[in-house]
Image 1: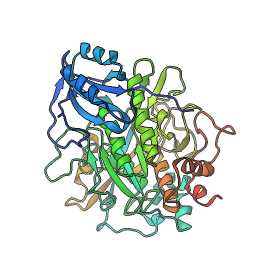
Image 2: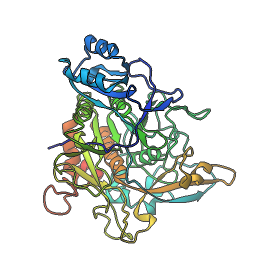
Image 3: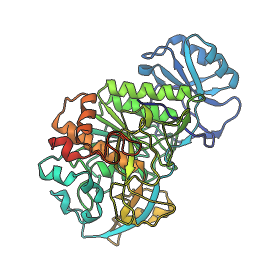
Length: 464
């Protein structure tokens, strides 16, 4: 049974917002240190499907500015509040819970490996994904039998939309160009994009790498579901930080545009007694998405921690439809061993998937990680070569990374492939299709590390 998760506090930073409802942000950021009169808060009303006018009036009477209204789940976010104002809101009969919202690191513990240079004459899409030049390095695709699914004629469908809630997607990358729905993609992060770039461009690296495990143009690497459409929903900054406001608004937006799959390769530790309002907000958003027929798939986290531990929970994974742990080899041995860093828990974990392995105490090689696309707009100093992709030398750059973040899009790809074959399948039935194909590894039945099994796209599609 799903539990709830709570995020560890990071540095408090508050972005100034307008009094507009749920509007994607693309303008300049105006970030300031928090003071007693400038708290940002989430206000959860008792009504789960609307925001009462009296509630908005109360926020404003206390000096607050409503920055985002999520009427469909009965949640509002507001700025310019004082501790006394939060207390007054908590005492209102209209309000169920109130909590301060802070920017937090939603990408803890992701391991970044080496950058790989690929020199070629130019982009050339391969009809057979197994013919991509780096197929030998994609143990992850072979492990879930994606190659067998393709050989059986299963390639997914452009009508299936996978929303990547992350740092954005580099839609100019040769592996992803033409695969991102530019009209539906949005940013909820108040930052200015570089000249010529859309607000949802990935200035980190994470979202681009994640997206390329779902689908690519089959130039150098292959993704699970070759014909799938991506939607970039930027909810994290160039540093991997974000507010609950941005992420929750992103979930609701993805549901409203009828995304079929919502991939959240992000998360953090919360404490149930202190962060009940934040947990309730995330729960409502996920339930709303499921009601809109979207399956929500999230990363379990990279702290080698038991997410079943009392009073602690990992958001959004423990309220998502599917919570994913990671597997991978060390020194290219035992490709299905639990990753050294992966969070675990028999109640919290639904499925395992290849996320790459990396250890602080045992030797490993880059090839033990997941090879993926690298954003040409990354601001990470260690990934500087990626910014030169397609430059005068004719070289392109890819990167290795490991984490439950990398495992999650494999499951999203499996879901996308099933949806292409069964377009009207309900969320619960889709979950069961993934379950039917999962390989029961470790102790028989559900267990701490593999959950109900490591996903297998071929078995889920064919029943064999």
